[in-house]
Amino acid sequence: MKITITALFAALVLLIPLFVTQAFASFPDVPSDYLYYDAINYVQTEEVVSGFTDGTYRPEDPITRAEFTKIIVNANLPSVKDGIDLALGYPEVAYDVNGPVYLVRIPEDDPNNFTGSEILYYEQCIYYKGYADGGDEVLSVVPVFNDIQADHLFANYLCYAKEMDIVGGYTDGNFYPDNPITVGEASKIIANAYGLTDLDSGPEGDIFKPFIDALVEQNAIPETVIDIDDILTRGEMAAFVYYLETDNDSSVDIN
Picture 1 (cartoon, rainbow, N blue to C red):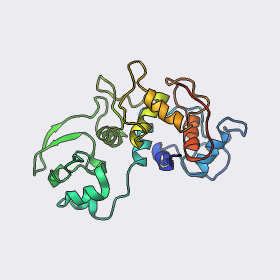
Picture 2 (tube, rainbow, N blue to C red):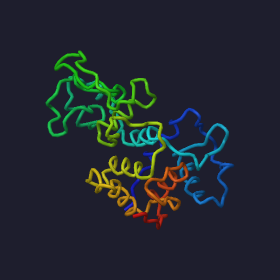
Picture 3 (cartoon, one colour):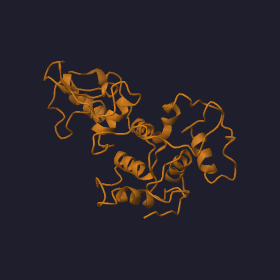
Picture 4 (cartoon, one colour):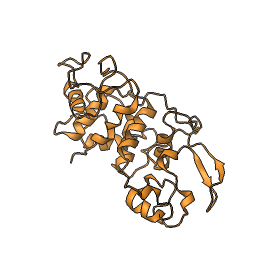
């Protein structure tokens, strides 16, 4: 069964200021015999991505951990119903309609057990963690990641992703947002966001195995991926989308 994730990568159009909307024409740096030509043409036609200001696609360029996380977060935001997000006096209604997106600190098993002042809107999800019950006083400020400040370009997206257990960061408390994302890391983010596996991690020394397995099951591993430590490129990102959304399959199994 294919997974529809066009929305997952639709945010890439807005991801980097250098991206611009362009007519659906072949990219000059993506020749027709390029391995992922069909995949890149697909994501362009579906308006999943667009080119850079110079008209290129740059298929071999990497994607950073923060950029990729923003793509996933934007794809998982449900539509907000008019007025519901302002109904602080009726948080249970907002929760029922919007889910935990606008109530990131609310326990799913008891959504009524909080006050309006405890609601954190998605846009405000930077790293304010402690609010006084029934008041607006900030009791504590705890960064979700040590290396993500409130003014970071993707701070709210990373906060949301952390609160929703889409990303976890490193054991030193950092996220390393500017590091290029690896295939293993990307597979875990996708699997967590879409619930492809119930496992939090694989065995020691092979922590990305359940997430890679989930993508292999979907026949979605790009042909140029050899190892989970490979850096994910924009071309391979397009291939992930192409294989997951169409009847075209990859036969790659990197296990």
